[in-house]
View 1 (cartoon, rainbow, N blue to C red):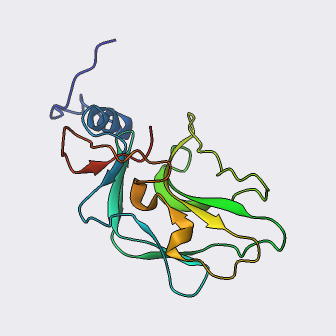
View 2 (cartoon, rainbow, N blue to C red; view 1 turned 90 degrees about the vertical axis):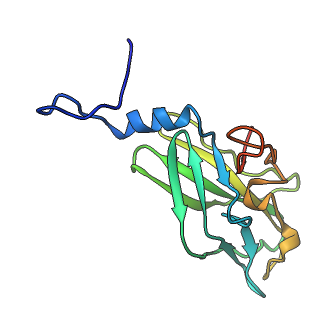
Length: 173
């Protein structure tokens, strides 16, 4: 099948879906975080607490976009009394809910730590923004416990996007 577009409709002969626009945008905008502002969608420890702040910023997944225009505060569950875990902050494209969001994936308690897996199937696609080490007994988080904040470091590759120096940070391979 050959597709083309986008043309003005004449008497309703051209109707486009969100998927058509996402497919178009995904041909030249890769998955990731726009680097302006430089702290866009970074995950930061919020003082003497178990809270993290997701900074304002913009992100793209498979041609769909998310714009966060204010600080969002999320509370991370306190540390277990005996075991550590890694929680993951993700940006999520959800086709079932028809939305994009940022959320927390709580890790499993373990002596050999592994961050929660990213969901990548027909229903949803996730990019990791940060991994958070939650030590046993933790009642507060420090910035040192957060890796990969803003899609760089940690599991993020830190590569460029939309051409060299295009203003994008890739979140994931």
